[in-house]
Amino acid sequence: MKKKLLAILQYLFFAALAAFFVWLSQKDMKKDDWAKLRDSLHRANYWILVPVLLLLLAAHWLRALRWRQLMEPLGYKPKRINAFLGVMIGYFVNVGAPRLGEVVKCTVLARYEKIPADKLVGTIVAERAFDVICLLAVFGLALIFQFDVIHSLTADNLEAFFHNASGKIAWWKIFAVVAGLAILFFGARWFLSKFGHINIVQKVKAIGVNIWHGLTSVKDLKNKPLFFVYTVGIWALYLFSTWMGFFAINETSHLTVVDALTVLAMGSVGMIVSPGGIGAYALLVEKTVSFYGVAGSPYGQALGWLLWFGQLLSFILFGVTSFILLPQVNRKKNEGPTNYSAENI
Image (cartoon, helix red, strand yellow):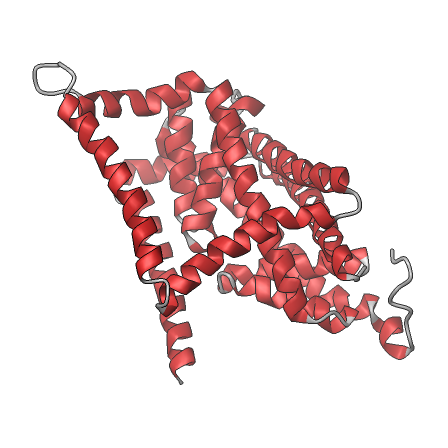
């Protein structure tokens, strides 16, 4: 009963969070802004979603191949098609139940490939660890290639914060920030050491340990370069799908693939902080493209919702198809014995 209540509260929290970001992205819009947004969406070229979906499909395929490669050190080599269909089913489930999709895709693959589901959990941790590294790399590349934009995003706010009313540097503010960071760092270390026996603290430490194990698990792979090729390929396809989406709206079609780096970085944050990226993704894309001379409302907002809709459509379309195909492609397998150690296609 307690677990069921916690699950219900968790879903209510995610729903409330999604509603908050949707409200935040719409709260300043006036009647005229709504009219412009509808007109922008009406004039959009929705055929652009076709290549966007194909690029996302290719990214999902590479993600399945990378996930399959992480299973090899465990002694398992599932069919590529089963790994892919499991990945898509996981994405589909995440649309309605955030985080549950990771469990479901492990369960699905365990059922059809006879792999213990608990052994697959470590591969999910490894995947997420490398995705965090890749997201940080995207932010780093955006900072390198778009330093002037990033600087304009932060300079005014930082200068206002670190200067006093007379325009001079407020050294006490700088000292306060440095001291605060030092206190936070050493305080966290002391807290983890002093209260390490508490259940929630142990869980936090376990998360850190699992992430580290996930990052170091790649050392056991037979073909390490291929793993990094898959990883770079996944994020490159994400980048090009974002750039391709720019052409759906005339007012954003001049943006470059380098501009897409920043949009991808900020959009990825939106997908993390809000379930399925609802509201947060469109809001962050709108704020980002406004620094490239694009009117945030309506064109930046229209772009954000179109890019988000493209991803949502890929999850639903490919996810539902995967639910239908998975039993079909495994029909012969279920009718007779299978050599699970053989090379799979």
